[in-house]
Length: 127
Image: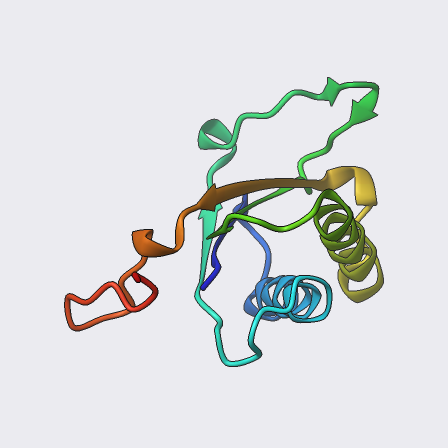
């Protein structure tokens, strides 16, 4: 049920991008109980002119390696689960691709279950 959008500056190879997707998906499976077969990801590369970010925000410096991850998912997860997800993704990306944890920006967008259709024009999760 999560839809993941991953944005980064252009120039990274396909293997790098695949590893990002793998880490994010595995973190969701382990921390927030996302079904393993439920993988919907859109990975987008952007030119430097179209990938704007604060060089520093909340005393956290960012570089051109910044990755922005937006996860749309069903509402209802606890704060503890969300924190575990953030940590798992940041640590996983550091380990998998050597990304500094400060360059992992994550946003969760929570929606009601009836706001999904996985095909056939049907709201599969609707009551």
